[in-house]
Amino acid sequence: MGLTGKMVKQIEIRAGGDVIHELYCKNQTGVAKITPGKVHGCDLHHGQRGDHGSIICWDYTHEGKRKKAKQHVEPDYENNTTKFTMLEGDLMELYKTFVITLSVEKHGEKDLVTWTTEYEKLNEDVEDPASLMDFFAEMTKDIEAHHLPKPAEAEAGAEAVACA
Image 1: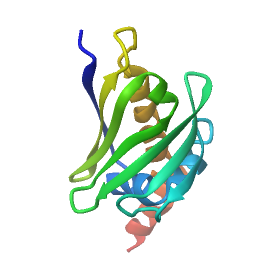
Image 2: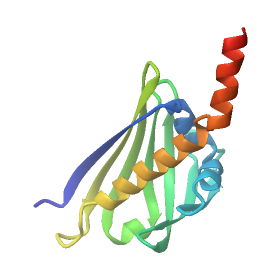
Image 3: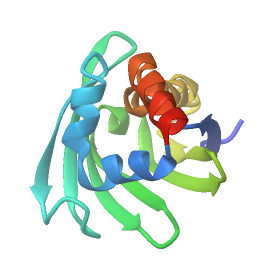
């Protein structure tokens, strides 16, 4: 068992992955509004939201504990990916390095959201971040549910199509 590792989690969604990419790149406070039980806020520490090189600080709850994560953000809008390099926070008590990459692939009516973590543990006793990957997947599904039409909206849309 080595100290370096990589984990990948893919989530198929119907709500448009571009919305998720946009939230995590430019509107992190929107993530907090949509998932208030998980994310409590995201402060900008340097640069402008959505700019390469900006620095943000997340306030979140994971595994029942309130945590912080200060990250350097590197969005790539052309390829629908963003890299978050951990600078400070709770994860840095366990890992020497920790990088999270969010990528979105468009596939017709469904999109594929991929979360990748690449890390170096401080020691052999540190677990792989499997529960954090599940946390990212849960937030992705929460955001998808928030952006999907509600049943009444879907019915109204169907009626509008039927009347046209």
